[in-house]
Image 1 (cartoon, rainbow, N blue to C red):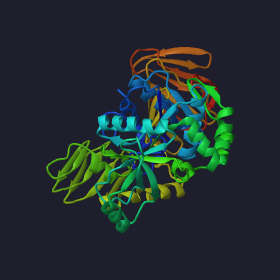
Image 2 (cartoon, rainbow, N blue to C red; image 1 turned 180 degrees about the horizontal axis):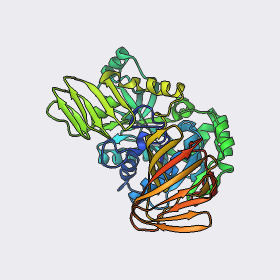
Image 3 (cartoon, rainbow, N blue to C red; image 1 turned 120 degrees about the vertical axis):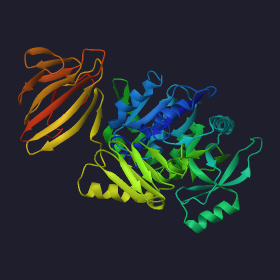
Image 4 (spheres, helix red, strand yellow; image 1 turned 135 degrees about the horizontal axis):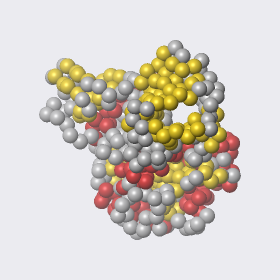
Length: 472
């Protein structure tokens, strides 16, 4: 059996402002109508001897990840929740420990959730090659054939061919992201490949090598796994143990040190979609001037640009090689060749204690979403959507009162000792301190407008008394 392990722990910085900490790029529909996580999972369809996928994700993304998996028919997914990000080596160790409890000789296929692969058939063929090498105790990675002197990727230099394993080579060396001159030299040499960050190996062998080279990481991962707790359909790792685990990548922790590293060169239309410029390069549907356009966009004498409008019309005149991305609360404009610098803006937002790098104006919850529409001194207006059958926690607020107005749908409202049913254009008032709950008993979404008033309106002013989603 091949056991797919999907790493879905991105932080949402490189594709800001569309990608945020609460909604990173793997959960967004960037290259198709589905999210990148969904495309990654669907790419496994037809792969021989593939077991159910295991997804390692951040605790804060758990409900979105579970919902997206259910949308494409992945029922009862195995979801391992990281309380904090600790890079790929601990995440893969946790998945290996989980697999070892059921299958001691299982082979892992480790895939990031946010990559693009155009040639799925070629990808499956490369996996078959990698599995044969993994069965002989090689730790296999995939090296992408470079078609340009790319400075945004690390590189792998292949060594001699492995006897009896067609298409597989020993890894001669790993190279960091190069400068332009080095990247051009790598391209000319012909034996360098882009480092894809995808792996195939036996779970047991990975843990053995991790024990040899980074026993501290294995000890931290093992402690977090042994002290795990079940939470609904999730496996929640122990927070204290996992936070104490060193943060390191699989490459640094194992692949660059082991004598068993192998590489399968591939040419499968791969991209890590790591910047807005790479998204422009890989996206389909260019207009006659080389532009990629998404949303309500008007262009006049614009060429080779990526222009995306999420909430309003965007117009551009007389520019070339630009990235223009609009969301409800931010606009980002940059030359394509400086798109990587968006991370500097995210850092400044963090340093200035702003919130635009954390979440959009629409914030997703397991019951649906809410959207901030207006805000001023001692008041805030939100639009709220509850999915059919969903309900918020039974709660109260210390500092704020709330007015609820039903826009469409049917609302069942717990208001102190009373239980009300409200329909379109009907409303109710929840004073501060009153226990309350909002439910949607119908088969259609419920939309309400919530008007908050009070001395403090933060999201942390919630006292939860009962919650079907088991949130704190």
